[in-house]
Image (tube, rainbow, N blue to C red; front, side, top):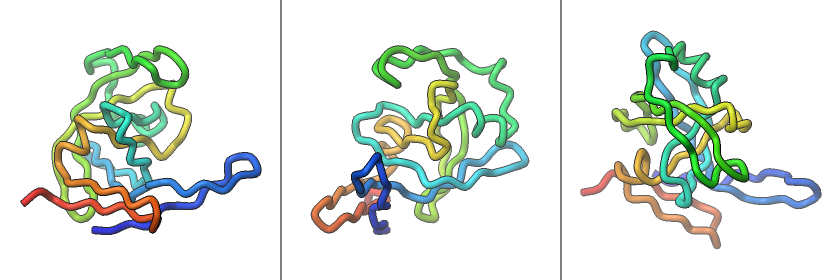
Length: 133
C-alpha cells in the first residue's frame, strides 16, 4: 500500500516526511496515529500519553534504556501490543517513554520493518508498505 509523505513545517522550512496511519490496540481500546517510519530507529517508540490512552499498566512491563534518543539516554518500557498498518493486524512490541514528546510515535526496524517490505521513494514523496511474499 502506498502512502504520500506528509508536509510538516519546521521553523520556516517545509519538510515532507514518511508518516503512515496506524492503529495501536490495547485491551479494550485503540488509538489511531500517523506515525513516522524511521529506518534509523531499532524499535517502535511512543509517548507515555499513548500508553495511558491504551490503558496499559506499565509498572508490570520490562524497563529498558534507550540510547541515542532525544539527544542522549532515556528510560522506557518494552510492551507487547497489537498494531494495524495497511489493513494488516499483527502482534509486536513498542517502547513507551516520557522522552517521546511527539504524539504520533516512531515505527522502527525490529518491531515494524521486520513485518513488511518498506520502500522509500523520496523523489515522488511516497512510501510503499507491503507484506512479504
